[in-house]
Amino acid sequence: MTTHHHAPRRSARLRIVGAALTALVLAGTGTATQAMAAQNTEQQPQSAYTPPPVPTLAWSDCQGGFECANADVPLDYRQPQGTKITLAVVRKKAADQTKRKGTLFMQPGGPGNSGVDYVRNNYAGLPAKLRESFDVFGYDVRGVGRSSALTCFDDARYTKAVTDAKGVPGPDAFGPALSEAAEFDAACQTNSGALLPYVGTEYVARDIDLLRQALGEEQLTYYGRSFGSYIGTVYAAMFPKRVRALTLDGAYDPYKYAHRPYAYDRDQYLALDGSMSRFLDWCASDQPVCGFGDGDPRGAFEQLKKDLDANPVTTASGGKANGYTLVYRLMFNINEGKVIWPSLGAALKKAQARDNTSFLLRPPSPASFDFLGPNVVVECVDKDYPKSLHKLEWNVESNAAAAPLLGPAMAFGPPTYDHQHATACVQWPAETPSRYDGSFRAKGSAPILVLGTTGDPDTPYQHAVALSHQLDNAALVTFEAEGHTAFGRSACATDAVIDYLVDLKVPARGTTCADETQPPSSTPKTAPPGTTLGELRNGVNERVDALGTVK
Image 1 (cartoon, rainbow, N blue to C red):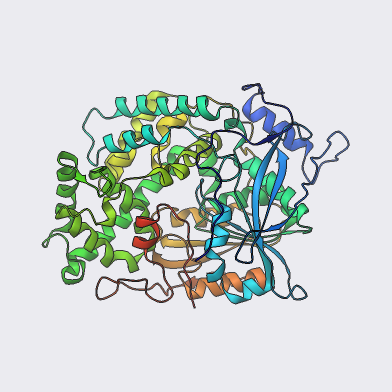
Image 2: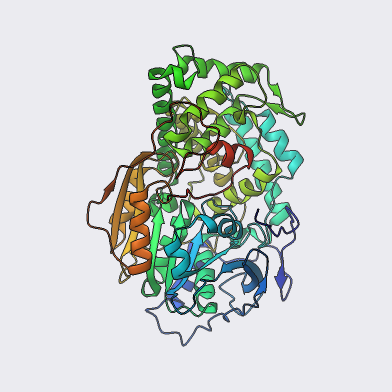
């Protein structure tokens, strides 16, 4: 078992080197970002700009063959010589350093997942060719994990929020949702106000470029999944000539994400409900294996949400699991694709029987909250929501109606995962100088590899297509499958990634993979070979970001 180093959980203290911060003394959002970008790009002369110092990495052993270090980077890149924030980093070096091609940056999804844990948890499952060719590197981005983790609601308040939420909200749910989101925003300001403006993805990309230099790499080799694909996209846009190889898996449409957030949200609602609908259709067609619904799984699911709302199940720890709990767990576990479908059927049947051992009846816990708080905050900094409450109400109610299976619980729930951010972000109190506001073309970059999964419930396939068109030099690999992301779930896609990262071999135009593991003939107790099982990964271990291991 890998031993992990954990910083004190949910610390609201900002680890700062240098002068203390004074509240929110900030310039305007877009103007400040654009002015700095004009000063600090590869194309512009640097005479008027003093670049930030490259951090020094003092590596030390941190068990399991990994080395850990801290990197001091500017808190605010408009003041590159000023206050610093400390980032936690980890690497595992290639065994034969004479054969290594460089350093592979591994960036997890989120926002909110620990890059340190991502590397430690997934290193052993990486294809041997990647482990032999690269030192594998990860880090906790600013505001996450060991890198000055931000806090909004405390554990007790978050627990109350998710316990009070409903799987089937009533007709007057918008007002309470708006009020709770305002309370969440105020808690962010109170507990992490000094950090909030500086966690946007432009600053994250600048951090990566400093880390690249600290590691002695002339160019960046990178794999990013889900939100990690957006981080990689912004890096390429800002530093196109510094790209050696970027793999963007489960890719975002960056323009929609940053500039048309309501359109981005709608796509996510429809993708998630589409995946749930296809699962229920399979359940109806293969009742012996699914085992849920007595011939009408869709009707049974709607009734189950109502029943759990009316009469929550008491968990083993004394908490309460209701219809919202069910929806929340399905939202993450359905990411596993068809291999998880029999397990979802069995878990729904247990929930119907009020059996609290069902992994779909595990309410979000403090381990989840450490992920969910930053998830909301980063997107509120990155996404430019209109400030109209009327427009907000129309969009929230419209999304709930368009995605009736899981959408209403998400639309009117407390600020947690992607679908529930609009109510908080429209009322967001902090300035956003770290928001990226530029072009996503990455003009002049090396070829960039984009992967999209046709039935992805989290990052819709059309977003990967859109990104491949927005980038000046991109190749798209399509994985015809259910579930989130492709690397580690498809041997075909995994081989394409390996060939690209190691040998810079770009897949042929129109490359399509169709090797998803199909539903088992019975509920598996352990993950089938070459896959992961969501019950183990997301149901028990919270929102852990893990790769499959394709042999």
